[in-house]
Length: 189
Image (cartoon, one colour):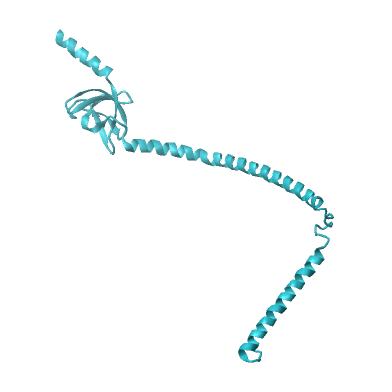
């Protein structure tokens, strides 16, 4: 009687201490009805599959799959942390879900940024127009002609042309004088 009570207590203790374990990387593991892997194969587990550990005996651990199948597997193929391959797959799935929403988010962000730039451009153009309107009045100069050109443009053009002509003549005279000194008065052009 005491032996039956002890076995019942051990079974209850095993259920109370149930923990999650994972099948290690790159493995296909069979779940068997008996500990020695000689019994009927109940299920096949792939790397990263989570199982509930119910107890262990020697080299074998009794597990319950997500489908509710209870059987025995070799303990050396179970680890207490999720394998890297399973975690990588989860992260890749999460990344692909994130990329699926990215174009829509990028389009919304681009439209928002474009709207902000349009508003900034409009504000800058308004400020520029007000500065242009106040500029001739601040100088005391007469307003520009209807074409937008200053009224004394021809004077500026004539002064620029005269400066260019004087500069050209001065450069030509200097070059002629240097050639004359070097070659004895014969012009070689």
